[in-house]
Image 1 (tube, rainbow, N blue to C red):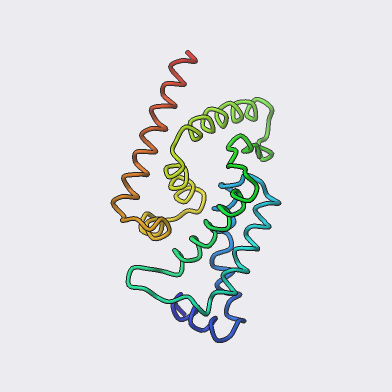
Image 2 (cartoon, rainbow, N blue to C red):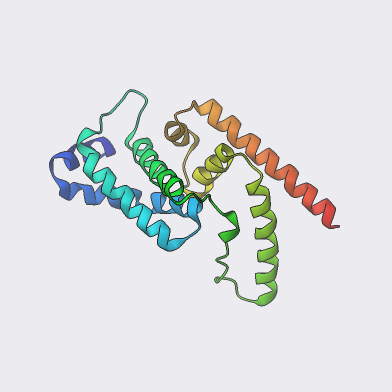
Length: 180
């Protein structure tokens, strides 16, 4: 059963929504996590996203260039934006700190230094660039999927992504040269 058929069935019989939930949970969770860097908040916002999806599924319509994937990610994006708007807070890239999988203290220290350098570079990107990088790497989305979420052309998203990666590369090279 393809996505379109599954969505149409879920509109009529909510038991099919479970399959949609399973298809998108990991991607939505990852996307929200990389916007909040906080597991409890991510869990709450992911739940809120799926509740909104379920409540508004009957109103979802297939459009020529649209997709269910883009629609659900726009809902997640709006949930996160609403969260920050209401909290008057912004994404704090400083909160990336989960290095518990490392095996020894030397590797952990090196990883922390690398993460700090990368976090500092990410903070200097524009919000749009940060979001495209998060969707690409955090949610494992393809460029055409990101384009639908961002309501931009594939070319615009690719350009935004590659400018972001170029900026990151320049910032990281500068950081390495300064530390030598």
